[in-house]
Image (cartoon, rainbow, N blue to C red):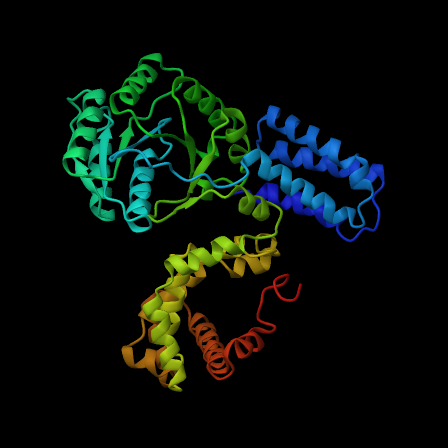
Length: 453
């Protein structure tokens, strides 16, 4: 998300960076470009007008003109304004009510509510150690009930059975009662997707809200919805006492206009960002970190948190002990590292959080394609256990067999072997010289724009 906006805004910022003084003409031109970037990102017009009004007042003010580094001051000003529009800080779920705390999910058809219910349940179970009950009040789509049941099983949540013959309000009432009976901490009620212009269905969701009296009423909205998402958000906010928003499918939207508009239009915080179908692809929304990503400054804090959360610590310790004993880094180790990288969303997701990573040249960005990583894993899987452990055994005939087994070319095997050799050398230096050895080994291997800064 935000690729287009990030590209445009970092372009504006790049022209200003390093300039000792800015003329009024420079400032006006920069403001025009910021305005165009926001409009192209499908940010709602009232939001654009609000942002530009504040930026113009600050940029043409005496305090800005007296700044010793006006280029940096402009960056900070845009960053602060993006944070203001999206909310000053992350607002987590308020589950302090008498258990069970009820969370109601509402939104348009196809927004990803059912998948989000499963993701949210997983997050509450794994990170917050909550006992969660999932219930489906979608009486129009039998597949939704089955889908939620399977998700509950996948994430370790309790599932309450319901049928399409029941009333949505009765299901909501039963879910709360079941949550109390089973001493659950949280009950998540999934509702049917509904158009905001359908008065009957909007009346139904109001009835469901009344029946379960949730502490959190979350509007789940597709980030690719653009202006339609903003209109729907306003309608749902008028119909229900929303407490927050979850933006879904953020990996499919390069513009990001919904994230900058929904908060402004509803006055309700964006609490989570969801991406893809993976059950762990739900992250808390931190406005200041997202603003940093938009301006090409990265989001190292989120990256570190992700590493701590998703990297297999046992595997990391195993590799560290192996290297300390002087054993070589083999193909099994490389496969483990590649799998962990994919676990974290792949190279693209990681680069997006590194300063300058989202704006790599096309050639460098193509090299970070996750498809290439999956092909490398396929090649390693095509090897025998002995070949993985002793890479020097791999001769010409073995290369042909490995390539054929993975449906690739011998050249691909050669590239993989070269990468494994480089990694083995780097790991050897790391085991000898600690972090300094690691940094020396990394010298010259970083993609353009990611080395010295």
